[in-house]
Amino acid sequence: SGKTQNTGRRVRAAARTRRARAQRTGAAMLKFVLLCALAAASRADVAEEEDVLVLKKSNFDEALRAHPHLLVEFYAPWCGHCKALAPEYAKAAGMLKAEGSDIRLAKVDATEESDLAQEFGVRGYPTIKFFKGGAKDSPKEYSAGRQAEDIVNWLKKRTGPAATTLTEVTQAESLIADSEVAVVAFFKDVESDGAKAFVQAAEAVDDIPFAITSADGVFSKFEVSKDSVILFKKFDEGRNTFEGELSKESLLSFIKANQLPLVIEFTEQTAPKIFGGEIKSHILMFVPKASSDFQEKMDQFKKAAEGFKGKILFIFIDSEIDDNQRILEFFGLKKEECPAVRLITLEDEMTKYKPDTTEITAENIISFCTAFTDGKLKPHLMSQDIPEDWDKSPVKVLVGKNFEEVAFDPAKNVFVEFYAPWCGHCKQLAPIWDQLGEQYKGSSDIVVAKMDSTANEIESVKVHSFPTLKFFPAGDERKVIDYNGERTLDGFTKFLESGGKEGGAPAGDDEEDEGEVSTFDFPRHPRRCFSELTEFTNQI
Image (cartoon, rainbow, N blue to C red):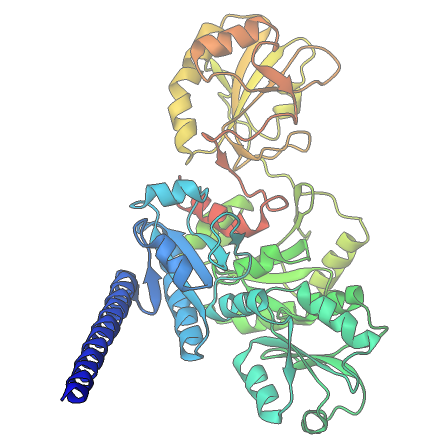
């Protein structure tokens, strides 16, 4: 009986233990489920639009934790460039998602999420930054093109090997079929010096996929019999084979010379490739695509381009498109004057050149480009005709043809505003500048003047932003002093009365003011160039 009672107590104790353990297990499971639900709910707060995550300040950190590789576009709903990018950005997001990639694309409305925009230094739209490993402190600026393929290639370079290893023919075929341009290295020994040089070159290029193979089947499929590097492309020759001694530098030169079409159309999508590339000498043909002789002109232009590959970039611009009219104006052209050709260099300073003939033939273009490469061309400087009443108003009107005579008059102190008719800041300054002219209209040695820098160019004065204010003091030294003071009547008066000392600085020492509209400063900001051209177009 006592034995039976002890057994019963043990059974009941064991049952209580099992119930307690079950309760603890159940509680733990409930806690786990709740945590998962909370995590899921937290992730659910990150909405998606066309495979692009929609981020706000409230879910930004969570998105970074959830996605180790995150590309974020800071945009403004009214921004034309953002609207143009949107379909390509969504396409890139879909491509990566379909591949099962852990790379995700996101967007932030910077006009609504101003705290985020300020935190990440957003000053223009779109601004695109890449966040890796959940870190917020040092995102990398996106620096490639604005087409889906460019975005995907750039991201893969940032998250994977610089060159993909190809072991099967189907892999190589897919890479080439899916890419506008792809560079494939064929090396029997992928550890050879040549292969290492290829990988170094691959690491230096963001917007083109690179691959390497030692597979016999891939060699055979593409009819390669020895170690080679081949650039495959969907235009012009279709493929280019590298010739010469393999080095990182020689491979990069080879890629630079062959990655773009012989003739490329200027569009918002191609602009980053055009201005972000290594070739800084560009010849532009302005031509209406709808014209009956368009293809004839293109054939002549393309024929001329063959001899300048890697030296001069050949570009055509549809002169009938409304958005391109201000670009024509920048080159001193009107739609009625097209077809026309101009050449521009984007080195330390932008310099324009105009051919002697308007006839577009391969022979004429080759002759023009040869004279340029030989250093025999003189820059083309635009100038309006001198107005009959240029000196009748208190503010004198300068153009290219009378600038030197007036500005560098040794007996006069000349204060000049270089402006653009469409510039909002220039319009704000206009009444103050007129007051200044009125104040000094009776002066024997002070001249207040202005010049439309969209229609007039001066070799001795380079204008990078509007408005630009420069002072040319009397004397034979041809000095130029930049005005950096307050843009008020009092500030201008003190500057002039001090002989250009109060509020002035030697020319070239000034920094662009936030209130100025930048012109197309390609050498310093090549990837902003299309935005600035369009700002010019949209008459800021």
